[in-house]
Length: 398
Image 1 (cartoon, rainbow, N blue to C red):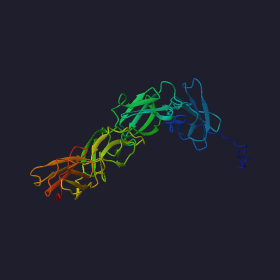
Image 2: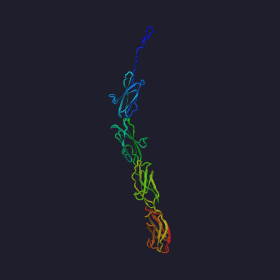
Image 3: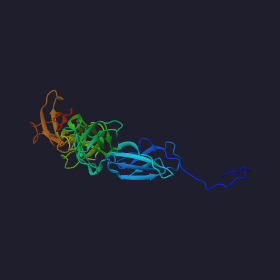
Image 4: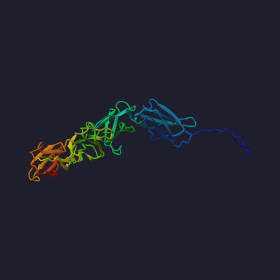
């Protein structure tokens, strides 16, 4: 407005407005870097809230522009990117007056590799001391390096790593790392790697190596009604379960089984003087059971017979009797007769029966009438051992 000499003011003319230019944004590091997305960041450099920014992304340092994003924020996320690819970023501010600043170059960065994919069957070979594990590319291209790892404690520690251009890795004997331990659970994971760039790890799950067949079974105890044997673990770790079995017919049937975490088993309640077969197999953590180790054969000891009265007394013969005392049919008995209580032996008789006839019609010469005779008997086991002699009642001939 104007004021005249008299101090009279004119009215204001129409007001004019303008906007200060926007400040050029300042670069900041990208964030949220993933296989298919990156967030570009910048500083406002004094521009107020509401300032518009134009951010751009390129794979060839802006010979071409892959995508642009206009935003009122100081960051923007670019999605749908290609894995394991270097991207360049730039941003400029657009002022309220419509004027744009020069572009500010932001830090370039590489998208992460895609995590490998899970194969339909993770474990293609599982053996005593080795495992082959596989995966899919997950979209990564040919020539991608993969780092596969194996662990016994689910990656609290790593037993071994294997770098490969293949979609599988072989661990253990003949492959990467030391021989694996039989009947042990192993965990596996894999990631894609390119220079300093790596994907997240993909868990491939776990599997257990096969159990080793027990070795060197040996008898440790043989008794009247019990037997025991042990074996070598053959590399199986503690905690391995073993299945021990006993049979009287060579395992056409099984009399009894014993599941144990020990390398030994005992069986009781057996029949005296009976042949038994024993065998053992290891049960793996993967549910598979090994073949049985070599079968052992043994016979329980025979039981000493028990005395019974003589029978069929005659002038020249006597029948000695005894009871089996749990010995089975087929047990051999050695029975003897004497007139001087076994300072000397008049005659002996080997029999499968529970009686023996001495004298006329039986073992030895005819007995002498009106003479006292002494008898004793022992059982002879299938294992060749004999019991002590058991005295039978003495008796005179008629």
